[in-house]
Image (cartoon, rainbow, N blue to C red; front, side, top):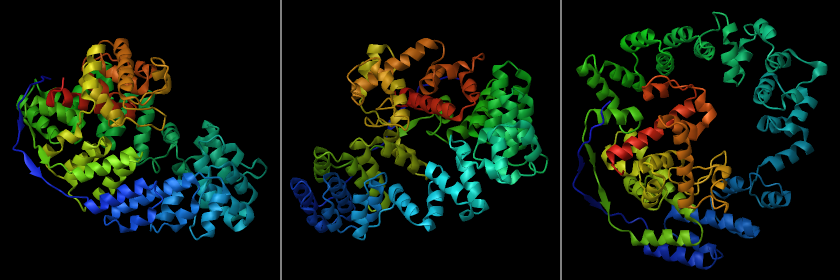
Length: 559
């Protein structure tokens, strides 16, 4: 593939002006914060309903912390009960919960649900079905079998199938046919599973474990082996390196992604004949497959090859291959730079929120305006970007382009460059292409300096504590420059581990070195190697980072 430079055209500037906020509303907000939220009754005088609602949420949140519950009761707010239920979801102090319930604000959470189940048997079933994996639910289920019908029991067993609580659920003294079926699978008893799987296919189908369905789909008879189970059987053969059998099944269900993965594996293993035959003759519609077909045909029939690249490029700028196709075809990138006049009132409002520690509530305010569609959405995307809420500006820009809007208006919001001076500085210090660092930050956190993942990775570069602690001892995980620097050093260590393959370094950043070493790259085509990765999450992450890298480096040309 050749990388061609191309012209970036800047279309005539358009200047728009919008007035979201009134001077009167701004004054009321100033007074509200100046009163330390105590003058909350003034909020009803605010004209902007979305601003009013966000400020009432701030008041409720703060009064809950202060234990000024009477003020919460006094606030007139249509969404008060819903919002309080969110805030009190994990509250265990029944005094607080009962306080609001006694005043007509119905709070429902685990603590109260358990209390009602313990005091009235009629509430046991609803508790168990609401919290099926809870140890107390399992106790209730075993002690009150008459309360639960067959479908209730299936629900409870399948929810607990992969949990450590499963065998606590089984009553060994009076084990039922249903329990026995799940026990056989839980014990991974292959001989027994083979006997019962087809006669109990409906139960097997309800097991929420893809790995079990892949493992045991080989025992399904012709009547049951259909739909997703053909794919699962393909995954079974693939896992056991019986690639030709897997390929046959994937072709039967026309799964282009799986077909491409198998032929990529075969090509990496130097099984050229099957790869050539499929890539040449299979009529896949998946854009990933088409891209590799275009690459294959490039030296055979350039005209047909370029016509396929043209199809793939229509998805620009959403995928790695669309950006690569765009570059290959030497297309011109055009940016439509729409300018907006400065809104001093809105800027002052943001400053008020930020100074008082409520920046995220300001983001919620803009988001409510966006969802209500009462203000020009392009302007709101601009504001999300301007105030540093890049995850929203990126997300809504993607939605706009996918809905058919001109991508030229959204490219700078879709690929922002915050902290650029820091990225440049650290890139120079570490002798790294800072376009790659920008791409990694975009995909890891959307440049959110306060981001925390479900796995507790933190900051712009989504670092685990032990990674950060290996470079700094100050626990300052969310410091922008330190977080980016550690992320750069961390990635650099993987680039040293895989000096000939940045792709594998990115894979290691996401999935760890040992994961990457399971797939040895033997074939020089790194894009085809990516397709051979069996883990969809890792594959998609690598593609997204590389997509953003190519965009930052060869479209925006930031480095």
